[in-house]
Length: 258
Image (tube, rainbow, N blue to C red):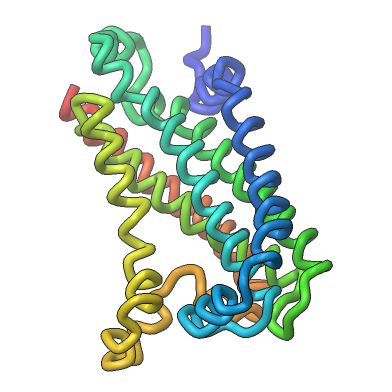
């Protein structure tokens, strides 16, 4: 009997991967975009002006897109992180990881088979929410908003999340319990937002170092909205390719730590 390939294991794990959570998170992402377009325009004018000045964007459409991209970032990341917890961390907590690895399956194939459905769920949730951003942007006002640009920016955020999750998957291989893994996940999620918060509350810090201004993850996507129309899909394709070597690194670490 021929030895099953890694693809066979991926297909098998995908059959039993949770489906309700990705569907629920995709619907929540759509609802979040719809909610922001219903609530934000009704906020006081001074609040909108503060956000425009703080994030250096112009028009209600740009402010709304900033909120929408945050929805992409949040829902895509956490549905993927939740899926990755069951790959090795949950199995180690239940003391069944050694048993699973004792089967005639390489550690790298085991990690890839369990990780790919979780990473795929994050891509699907991110793409669905990005599509909602593009649909909502058609009815928004503002000189910096276009449906294609909103879609590209959303896909770029999805690509960024995918790389974060692939790196997180490597870190989870060493995690001993879910609490430790969640702390690491929260740090990975929050760290890229620090420059954006700095731009809002301490813009003078970034102004002294002009090269750091573009490190603001979400506002910079709106500033370069025209570029995002083609860069977003390209970035997502590159992110998928980057997952391959990262999963291999995680598999090697899993072999050593098991």
